[in-house]
Amino acid sequence: MGVRRFAALGDSLTAGVGDPVDGRWRGWAALLAEGLADVQGAVDFRNFAVSGARTRDVAECQTPAALAYRPDLVSVVVGVNDTLRRTFDIAELAIGLDRVCGQLAAQGAVLLTACLPDPGAMLGLPAPLARPLARRQRAVNAVVHALSARYDTVHLHTADAAWVADRSMWSADRLHPAERGHRMIAARFHALLTESGLARGAAPAGEPQQPPPSRADALLWLATAGTGWVVRRCHDLLPQLLRLAGAEVRHWARGTGARLDQRAEHALLAALAAVALDAPVARMGE
Image (cartoon, rainbow, N blue to C red; front, side, top):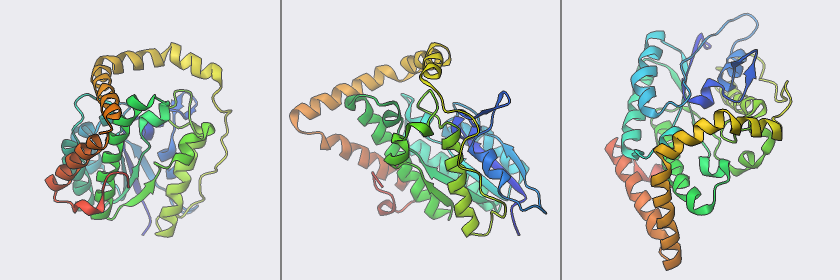
């Protein structure tokens, strides 16, 4: 039996930010939904993702709505916003994400998951600022890898450097995919679902139907929505990030940078232990 109901959970990536169509965000999940059914079938699609959502938001708000909807297929792609908060806690994230996946899998849904590139690399931050964010995102990805094995999810690797470096894949804000990037994610998920017999329609086209964002678009974003984003992050994350950057510089000067990696590794192992996951399955950097 094919997919009848497809639900999408997550943050702005899944909400479609960066892929505007007719005054609304479309995004990779909507593009994927179009290719799930053949000409004789129909797939009902509901997008529960909300821009800015963290794992806690997905667990507390989006998952109950998705459970009531009873999807056959559900995507759970979240975590970047967690890394951009001063309250980042990898153990709390692991517990919450395990609960989300467990509840949906227990209802019989096939899960889609993905590991994601770290925001420091996407924004091109200086190394002392980028490394702490990279450690956080690697830890999130390690948890997702482990959970994908536990729940036998359809898992997509999107943390590789190749597409992060491809400017045509990204919108003006450098944090969200442009239309080409959303189409790439949809096509790669579609290929995996086709292999398992769950996608029966045509794959999403790879070429965008709209021009890529220009430098003027980037400047406009920075002058409007980007200003608000920077202010919010400066209030929430920047003071802590500056302290983390200071620690990076001090350890680099002393030649003890490996200690920071070890601390992050220990925190990850404790998080995996908190949800009884096998630590060697998902070590930092995988």
